[in-house]
Length: 408
Image (cartoon, rainbow, N blue to C red; front, side):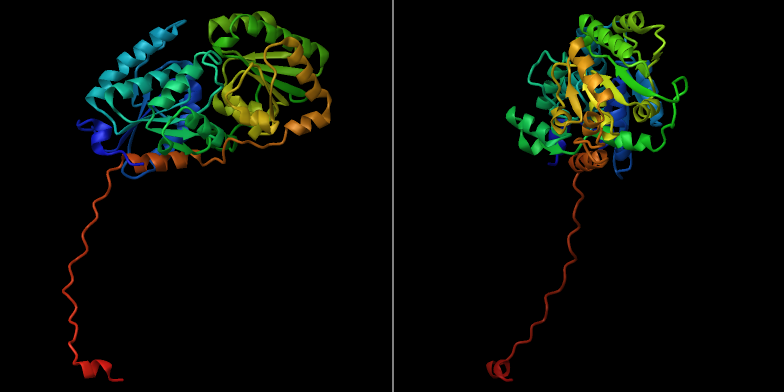
């Protein structure tokens, strides 16, 4: 699908006729958008600009550095203990004048954060085409996960181009009435990033035992705040008591609502290493080193299976059902009994572990960013004028007498 000049700019003039603005707000967005930014910058004729909202600050800067990326623009909007409505308002207020002064040919954003939702709305208000990377993920429940499900529904409805990681995501958009011509199955760019970084990630992580089994635990979603996190941490303590040779690595999210709970439950435990958030190369190294992953993260549900690590998903529903259907991830929620039973089975039953640790992923082949860049370039570049063929003088056709024409 090609976007015409009138459709893409609403009659205004671009700062560059083929500018693509990539918007990033959080660490996971940076990881998943990095391959897209790199692929777009290899496309001749495209001008690529990178805008940060700063929804997360330290984690975002760290992730960009892992991929050698620097921002062209930074709204720097993060506030301590910020609320969703205030953040969304600041993003809209910060982006709108930029889009008005220098409207790009297309804006791209990835995933389901408040940054993505607000960016989609800002583009809709300015009639600027919006491309949604990792489109079509759904649980069917607007409150689970909160607020991500709502954010991605809004983005999918507004998007001119929807880049779906799987066929299931494409079908979800079709059920919602999204125009079929806007939907493209590309794979998930996180596999591109993972394969790239895995080739250069360190083989070991300092501060961890060199031998024995390692469990990687991450918690960060809003629906995990409070009692759900307490239940998960109680299950982890019981698991460590039941498996004495087990060690736990937990990169602690900076949100104070989770940080205090984690340190209160696990701080000082001899089988636990509490760390600051890991850079992506270190996270990939931790994935390669670990035996099992316990997480509420969406990205780790995609990354860990590709490296042959079973995932127990600490949520009641997932928008990534493909890994569960394939048997390389399992939904266990936050009930301590379920978590303990599932983890103990994997750590004590070799057959159960082997069934999940197969090193397969339904989320891509490492070429998603190239597919996205091709589709974006095709959409935003004005068609090249076709030079008319040089006029040739009419061929001289000899006029033959009837007898000459018929003679052998």
